[in-house]
Image 1 (cartoon, rainbow, N blue to C red):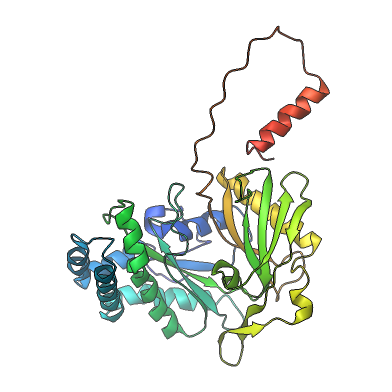
Image 2 (cartoon, rainbow, N blue to C red):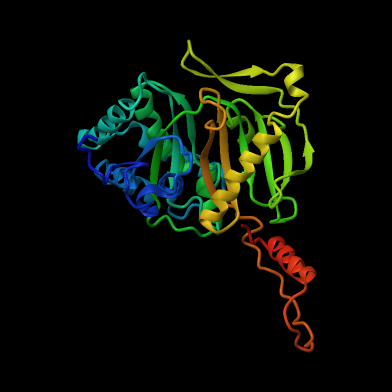
Amino acid sequence: MSGFDPRYVQFFDGGTAPDHALLGGKCASLVTMTAAGMPVPPGFAVTTALYDAFVEESGLRDVIVNGLKRLDPDDVASVDAVSAAIRDEICSRPVPERLRRPVIEAWADFQGRFERPVPVAVRSSATAEDLPDASFAGQQDTYLWLVDERDVHEHIRKCWASLYTSRAITYRLRNAISEDGLSMAVAVQKMVHARVAGVAMTLNPRNGDRSKITIDASWGVGEAVVSGHVTPDNIVVDKVLLCIVEEHVGDKHIELVPDSAGGRLVERDVDAARRAVRSLTDDQVRAVSELAKRAERHYGCPQDIEWALDADLPDGQNLLLLQSRPETVHSSKPKPVTAPAKASPPSVGFSLGSITAHLTAGRAAGVTN
C-alpha cells in the first residue's frame, strides 16, 4: 500500500483495530466484520481525525459552536437556518492539500486492486451512530454509484455536512446528546451490482420475538428498501430451523439499477411477472438468515443488517454483507421480571422432555447457536 497517514485513512482489511472514535459506527463495524471473515465489499475509511483537522484548520469549529448555542429544537425555522449555514460552510471551505493527499493516495491504491475502475458508495460514519442505546440509522447521508474521483471528494464533504442536517441536530438536542467529541468518518466502499437486496433483523420487529429472523427484500439496489420507496417482500424465518414461517410478497414496483452509459443509478419499473413473485428463492432466504445469525453471534446481540446479492458474482459467492448494527427498539427494553418458582423436591437428572423445554425457552429468550 501507499504511504498515506493511517491517522487519516484506513482500509477495512488493513489489520488495524476497529477504533470507534476514529472510524465512527459504520466504518468500525465494517473493519470488525472484515477481520471476522464476513463477506464485506472492500473499501477504506476517511477517519474522524481528518474531519477534525479540517474543522480546526478551516476555522469551522467556532462557526459550529456559535451556531448551535442556545438553539431550541422546537424552533424549526431556526434549526433549518443554522443547519443550512453550517453545511454550506463545510462544503465550501477549502480542504488543505496535506489533508486531501491521503484520500487521493488511498483512492489510487483502492482502484489499483481491480482490472478496471469500479464504482463506489460513499457512506457517512458518525461517532454517535450504531450505538446500542440510540437509533441514528438514516440520519446522515449515503451516496451511491460514484465513479469519478472528483465526485468522491465532493461527496465525502457532503457526508461531513450531513452531521448537521436539521434532523440530526434536532435529534441530538432532544436527546441531550453532547456535541463534544462528535465527529464524522466516511466509508468509501466498492459498490455492489445488486440483483436483489434488502435488510434483515435477527428478531421479529413486530413483537421482539428473538426466535425469528425477519427479512425485507426487493429487486435492485437496497436503497429502495431502506428508504421506503418500495413495498418489499417480507419473510419471517424460524431462527433454529431456518424455515419460512410467514411471508408476504410485496409490490416491488420499481428497482434501482446501474446505468453504465451515464455512470449512475436509475429508477426502473419492475415488470408485472417479477412484481408478483418473491425476489428470493428458498435457498437464498436460508443464506441471508445464516448470514444474519452469523452477525448476531459475532456481536452477541440482535442485529439489523443490510445485505445484497451481487449480479456479477456466481451463486454461492454473491451474498454480501453491507452493514450490521445493533437493533435498538426491542433490545433496549428491560427484560420482564418473573416471580421465583415455588420450591420443589430435588430430582435426579432431567427427562428428555424437560431438556427440550429448557432449550426451547432459552431460544425464545434470545439464545442462538
